[in-house]
Image (cartoon, rainbow, N blue to C red; front, side, top):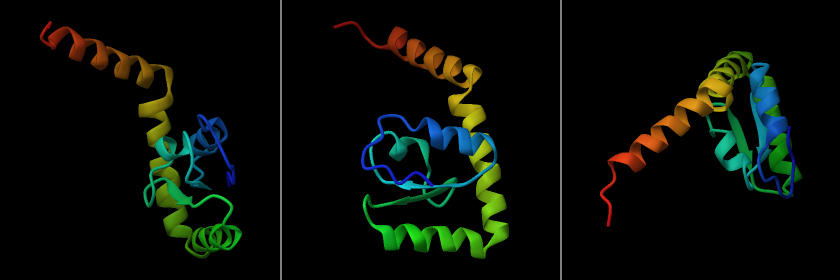
Length: 103
């Protein structure tokens, strides 16, 4: 659970996801990129305690969903946030710029 009012990156969420834990987080800042709603966890409007509790209850009540999203969370960390994943993304970005027409 990451109930931040503001979060520029979301390292705590990434660490949880690396441990195959789906994340319930505030729908702010970098968490909006880190957590994929209904795939690796849930995003909740900030400062909405009741909605946070409902999101947590949803995961706790459904072990199969928790397991599924936890596996997807781990996969996302490996492909998007690992050193290899970041290097691949940078490589793709550089190739896009090399192919772009020069004005």
